[in-house]
Amino acid sequence: MGFEKYMDVTPEIQEALKENRPVVALESTILSHGMPYPENLDFAARVEKIVRAEGAVPATCAILGGRIKVGLTPEELEVLCRAENIGKVSRRDFAVYVAEKKNGATTVATTMMIAAMAGIKVFATGGIGGVHRHGEVTMDISADLQELANTPVLVVCAGAKQILDIGRTLEYLETMGVPVIGNGTDDFPAFYCRRSGHKLDFKAENEEEIAMIAHTKWDLGLKGGILVGNPIPEEYGMDNEYMEGIIEEALKAAEEKGIHGKDTTPFLLAKVKELTGDASFKANVRLALNNAKAGAKVAYHLSKLSEN
Ligand code: PSU
Ligand code: MN
View (cartoon, rainbow, N blue to C red):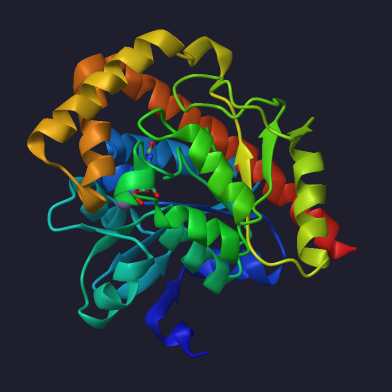
């Protein structure tokens, strides 16, 4: 394969993987394109700490100077969080960023790619990309969904934001054969809100059950990933109707400004933040921390299962 020569895995992560200890991949687009500086730096430290508190090793991924990074130093995190000259790297951008020695933050799709290359099975994030509203016309469907179909990594998320067409996102995942499992819920969460109203076929009681399903899927030789919907903790969840109004407004602003393509998601995220102020940002931090914790638990149970 030969990708190793492009890749730097920190010694701590290398060792944990060799000893089959739990490791949780984390993405960097959420830092550079999803949160303001310096709050994102504080968040980056907290999310890594939560993973460690659960006995797992955090592996934040990015592309820096064309090197595929698995695990970042505090200095590298600072570069990403300052987000000066940091591109947003999805699958189609990957080779360009490596070849041209650029700096890029990785989306869910590329973080899954890197995790799979490094041998990491679990990845925790905030929200995934999906089918955008009117996606049936614009064909704006995040590459995250294709990656879930093809790459063997389990992704813990708080669902998808209502900026997307959640119903079509779930339809697409079904067509692509991606298992979507609710962690203690049978309703696919809607990021800031605990429920989207879209029912899931599978509700798992806990992270151990989720790990067992993932282990079995890969043991069966089935390709692709697994998506876990982990609702935002009750006390931080926001009101559905309120958020729906905010999102309508953000979508209208995007249309007026003619925003499209890869700028759509960051634009909408920034607009929602502007319209809701601190409340949505706080919720964003809380749900991402909650996902990191759940991811670490899944990684722990998966490492136990693969021992036997
Ligand atoms: N949704 C969020 N927060 C995010 C993203 C999506 O609520 O930070 C980021 C993730 O990195 C995701 C990417 O993989 O946006 C999807 O972008 P696109 O729709 O251009 O594929
Ligand atoms: Mn898109």
